[in-house]
Amino acid sequence: MTTAPATERHLIVVDTETTGLDPHYAKVLEVAAVNVTTGEQLEFVPYFNRDHLITAQPEALAVNRYYERRLFEHELDVKETTEQAEKLHGMLTGNTLAGANPHFDARVLRSFFRSWLPIGDDQTEPWHYRLADLSAYTAGALGLPPTETPGLHRCCELLGVTNTRPHSALGDALAAADCFTVLATAERERQALAEAIRAHGADASEQAS
Image 1: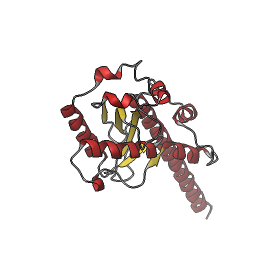
Image 2: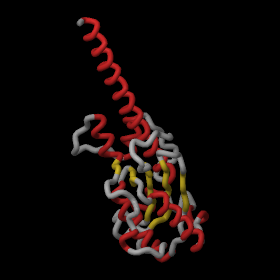
Image 3: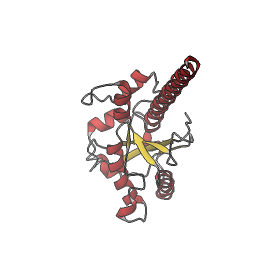
Image 4: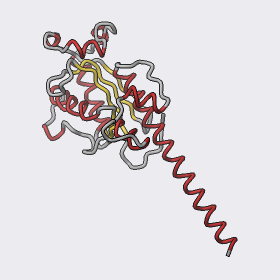
């Protein structure tokens, strides 16, 4: 999974499983982050106020299988959640936030950090202001219409990546990270081939002259 960074920023894929599909109101049930540059992983189930389950969207809980996977058995206490939130914040600081739907996760993370860390609003977005969207990256690399950007499941199909734990935070984060790696590797190979063709053409021109 590890790839050489093109810039000093690391690519951090984040996936959150939440109580709803509206990022302005959704509460985090599970979060995972994968540093595509180094391979570092972080996964945790934060402390959760059970009252939020009353307003949770059934569709969201059905997708992330909150009850089936018994996430409540892995829930951290308040102190542990704060510690993991600090780790995640540090992992993202100065780096590129990436994912299959990074704009959703970015909004959710802002609220999450505001709730768990003693920081100001200007510190709730520690990542670089440009997000890395796997759907857009895949569509551009494969020449797909901009109105038909693929979701994570379709990206995996197109790129030959297997998601062993779909709709779990770490499963989706790892699958997205693998997709980013496949695309980055293909681009490096394309550039290497183009350079080899240019070099061969230059040699042929010199020999002809």
